[in-house]
Length: 253
Image (tube, rainbow, N blue to C red):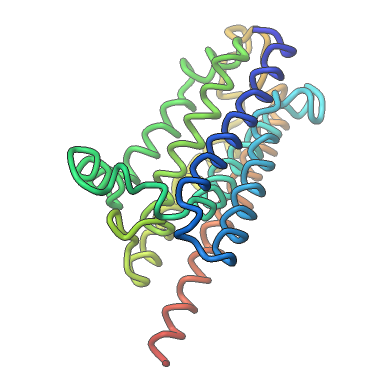
């Protein structure tokens, strides 16, 4: 798949997501206050705008010398910022068709519980960073775009126990959220360390073709690891801090 075709698909995807969102908003418009409409729309538009950056092939942003660093920055962007912003942009009534009754309600409830959500999301994250899948996605822009989409979808599932829009598939309590966010920061820290400390490139250079996201050098790999390690973990620890002080404030009240 060419870069031009990927750009066209990205544009169509953004427009489709925006169109679906407005159709959904129209269906529940009367059930939301004016303040809720503005807040949800603002969060969703911000998340969707940042999501576009996460789907631009990394060599186009800073050139091929730092393509892996850019790709890791995109991973942090999609999983740490875009996913929670999109969840904050979705009002609870959006999910009424699934949460009223039937198998959708039960399946959704069990998938969004903290342990399944955490395990499924991290299975997706680590699976796509294994050499075989990562090298495949480095040779094919379309497969790389699919990987980014799965990262975003898995991250929205991972954030659900903290930011659930509907009480039918509820959030954790404040203490539970603090503990959950602490563990949510661990995979980013682990992946960052795995890329930072090795003395050689993890992914086989001879197995890569187009190299849309593969490390161009050992320096590129280490810089990517540091970016994932520090800013990546700080997003979750920052969210943890906010939840902790909210919890503390409620206890004081």
